[in-house]
Image (cartoon, rainbow, N blue to C red; front, side):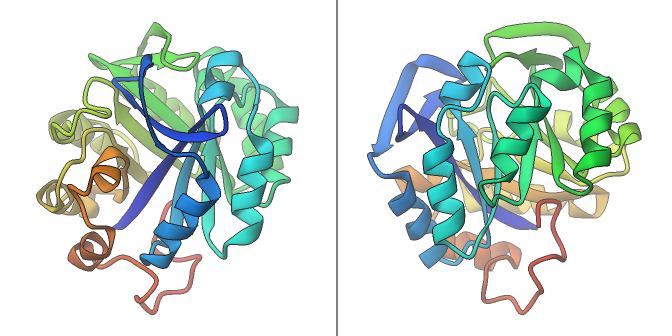
Length: 256
């Protein structure tokens, strides 16, 4: 299982939100490229980037920063936030990132997701962000009536490379992942799942590692590595991840 640092960009800065609330953001750095370099230096092979401005406004807004990260580091980058049409997906993939993460359109335009999977095979992930089991869209500002596991099953059928599952009520809280909801989701599909939201300790990561046989291939860690609750090097060693593992970069993960 891979430990994947999260880098959320708002107005060109690296921030963390509390439960997806834009009014409760905490700035952790003015230079996202420098922070990405730090995580690379600490051994990560993968990086999860969210364009928060894009998620809120409906189209990518931080492409220049994203491209600077992708072009300056030999690292696999997955990017989400505001990717709601073909041109936005094409634009973000053109920056040199490995994968594009779709959210809102998975609920609102599932045929478009299928078309994008066909056009960009192996490069499309779907982020399922849930409140009480229902999918939130449009930068977490709207909660739909769609059940998370139902959406995951539909997206698996159209050919997405994997699912990123976030429990919004756990995100940014350091209260631990929602293991029961995650387990239910993983058991409903046969494609890789990356866990996100609330991961606060190496103990949490080991709990997720126990779900690896069911299909949990990665864990996104945000606030905990910025606050020092989790040491990235130690976390990688604990779950057998990191660049010191002699594994080709296109193996063993949902986001290679």
